[in-house]
Length: 610
Image 1 (cartoon, rainbow, N blue to C red):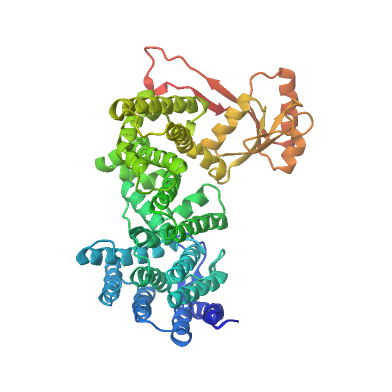
Image 2: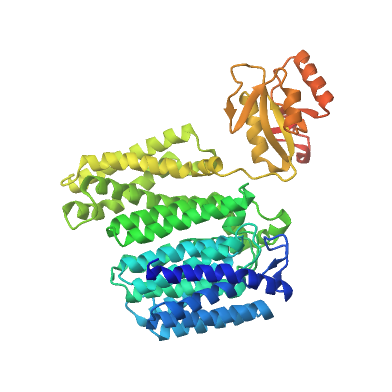
């Protein structure tokens, strides 16, 4: 084994060996996390796992690695934060006391020369660095809300930080981060679902501060001084903790809850609420962490405009996912009441529901990306030249004209979750109108001198793809992600796999109050048998009902169509009675409301099982 891998293996072995000992001691001394309404775990679980991580990282660094001045700063300040977290685990200190400890640790890091070089002013860099160190530390702490999530995300982030150190000519720092990642991976053996030990505040604060301060070594000691890597690399490597913290903070503020208040409203919790298993939800966030970390490595190799485009794409995708997840119901209606009682918050919630301002801002980004893509495909990445000068000069024109075309054609009148073929045709017309008007404006303003017709053809195609793709995201998420599970929902068969059956299925899936869990279709039409509708298979309606009821533990059969003979209905009813399951039929009724009738008994068009 090469000598450079020895510290990595030792850090892994120490954590693997010490964690069971820490777990046993924590249980003996009563240092366990008990289940609470605002916490995710269901049984008492040992804490203090951070002790094993800290011991492995620090001892390995002291005994087996070369020491650098910045390394001493990171290890020393992170150890101080470990002690602050340890005191909190033992004595349950106040939030402001932990904040003071975090600021003190940040002051030590800044004093010894580690800072974010994001501006030309030292005072601003000092403020940026404090917010960075405190923010990332608390982001990791907040991310520690599901088995294996915080440790896994931190391991991925530290691995990509190590790669960035290597590419920047800092092998010693890379070795330090690799050993840190190895320790976290070893801890995951005990912390993954179902976790037998949690890292505690001592672990989350040590891990968060270690990652945040280590990223500063890459900026302060690396060779690359290009502004974009300096700005983007630390953010991209730790993008998932930043995203989750921002997401939770905004939603808690909009719902009238304190941002510092614990809860089951994180990204991971909402994915589980959609029907994912805990393992799948965690793995999905691992995937996004890997994507953002890979982009952090690419940023240092690609040209600036390509990097910006890729970063914008990642941000757009995660923002759309965040908007989709924001609509997932986590708490009961009573828990959300305080938000609607406040006029200011009521305005914000209404605004977020309509999403019109968000759509416009999103389209500004998409129009810019589309126009840039057309130029990049035609002329290559950005470079000083006539063509790219024309791009910069005319981009505002394209944004103005396309937004006007979208508004005129009614693009902003639709509801994303119901986007269909008709909307796609509308988008094509809006894009075509925007392209024609843009060409006319450029013709009269610039006489179309120096412009390429190919660019505008590519721009039109890309713009249509981006516009349609963005509006179809909610339908895409609903197909890719599970639908919200109905707890204790009645398992039902749907008899009739036609249009009415598909309508009934969508109603059952979208209306959680009905508390139904569809398992399959039945239909007498032999041409439909074996087909699949929205993931449910169609079975033969002649002779399969009683077998399916028994095999699938069906509790009710729902008939979707009124066009069924009385004789066939009687046979179905006899089979249901024999299996002791209820038989119901969907009806759609439009009731006339007379002028003298009180409005309280008026009914709108409804779909219901009756």
